[in-house]
Amino acid sequence: MKEKSLFRKIYDYFDKLEDRVRAWLSKSPLLYAFVAGIAIVIFWRGIWHFADMLEAEGGILGFIFWPPVSIVLSIAVLLATGLFVSFFVGDVIIMSGLKKEKKFIDRAREEIEAETAHVEHIEDVLEKIEEEVAHIHNNHTGPKTVLETKTEQRSGGGVQPKA
Image (cartoon, rainbow, N blue to C red; front, side, top):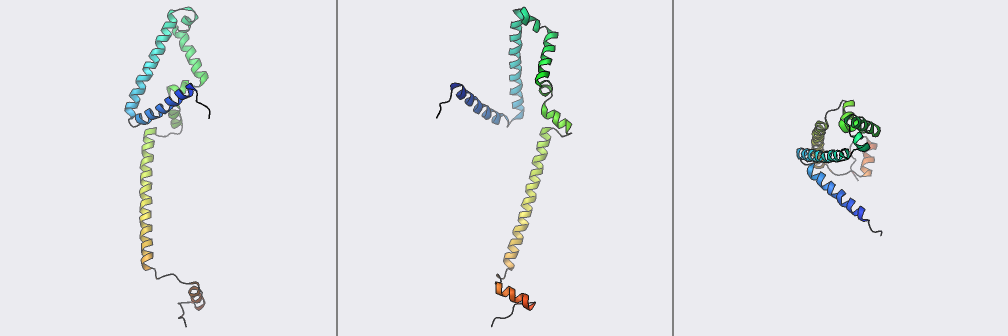
């Protein structure tokens, strides 16, 4: 068996860590939103300070960070990569708007309620079936043999007494 590379081990570790953290944070959406918001602001603040460092050194990089140029350049890159609308609005919001659907959280709540009602209906049907089976079992006089069934069909009525 081939030994995993150091990069692959690190990648696998952080992949599993991400799964555990997301599972834990998903239980509390408001906490999840605050943690994500803080992390995003810190990330962009770091990018902003890095851009300031590059601008301070001058040259062509200083020109790129001149506000009109940076706005046009960033919009062009975001449009070319298809990220402009999806980042600022989100694919799920666009699709739900086009389909005239409710918000995801409202839809999820309605689906849970509908599934609960469906399960309750299935439980009611099963109770009725159990009652019918019990009734049939209590009123059952025993199975007829093939001979008794054929005799009954020929005579057109009840079972003929055996000789």
